[in-house]
Image 1 (cartoon, rainbow, N blue to C red):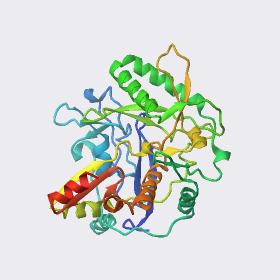
Image 2 (cartoon, rainbow, N blue to C red; image 1 turned 90 degrees about the vertical axis):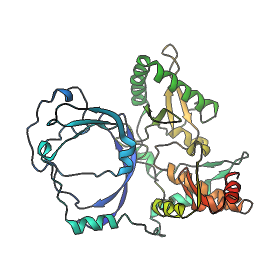
Image 3 (cartoon, rainbow, N blue to C red; image 1 turned 60 degrees about the vertical axis):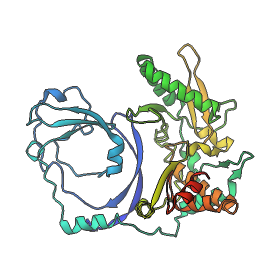
Amino acid sequence: MGASHSNGTVQLDCESLYGDYPFTTEALVMAKLLNNLPNYSFERQEWPHLRNINLADPQFNVSRQVDLLLDAGVYAEIIMSNILREDIQAPIAQQTKLGWVLLGNTKTFNCHVVVNTDDFSRFWEMEEITTHNESLTIEEEYCETLYSQTTKRLEDGRYEVQIPMKTDFQQHLGHSKSQAIAQFKQLEKRLTRDEILASSYKAFIDEYISLHHMKPCTVSITPNCFLPHHGVIKPDSTTTKLRVVFNASATTSTGRSLNHLMACGPNLQKDIQAMILRWRSFEYVYTADIEKFYRQIRIRETDQHFQKIIWRNSVSEPLQEFQLTTVTYGTKSAPFLAMRTIQQLVKDDGGTYPLAATILSNQLYMDDLLGGCHSIEKGQLKMNL
């Protein structure tokens, strides 16, 4: 297979070397895109300004194949504001959520990217707007069937869904409580050293409980799974500075994680490029988002035991088990369950609210709405839905 051909896409659960920043992304599968980087191995120099930092690639001087090329969307999420500089010949260190990365000239790092121009142009062509393949895989059909047969509409209008676990998951889901306790105690030490983080973390958990998105476990149901959790601070965020990440990719005693044993479901996203082009065609545009998107959808009671966590407000209290009652960010099936529920909402209530149904069907990318119209009056009508 040549470098210009993709063998489909895969969803990747990634994590920094230091275990404090997990994220999920999609990647094209290709035989080869770039040559080895650096072009040949070289001896590391002792730069004083780099002595006490954690590098995203500690072996940056060893010539190796490029395993994964992250796109600008991931870069925008991981980049942080701290930069370390020394003299003009030394590399610049840029902090990211995956660790520090080094920037410098080609003489410093022996990195000369060699790409066949014809192949590279076809690489970008693969990123062009495409139509979705209507045929589903066996696993995707299973997720769709399970959703259709088990989803319920609750009295408050919300939906209750089942987590699409793979059929053989019980054979491979191991113990996870002891690891979750150990990681929680590490988190607790961090919270005792940082009063601002501790206050934000406790406020987040209190909100989870007050909104009934989390509740104490009163009945022991097996199989179950405990999710380690940690906080990620986003200093530039204008809304929530702290995001608590529940790590469904943490491995259990069998070496398998909850995400390993969960079916993904079909990709129901609209093509973002097509959406942006359509959005730019309007004379007047607006944006909006769905607040706590995933958490608007309830998980059925028995499946909540796959989303258990350890928590206590103070080290003087006993450790307590809680279960997350809603679709959880970071679980493999969350995007499918969320977007499929939007489709179900349109199906159930679209006849009553046809304008809203059109917007949800065509202008929503996950929880972000890209809307528009050609008159102020229509825009006001849409924004008041």
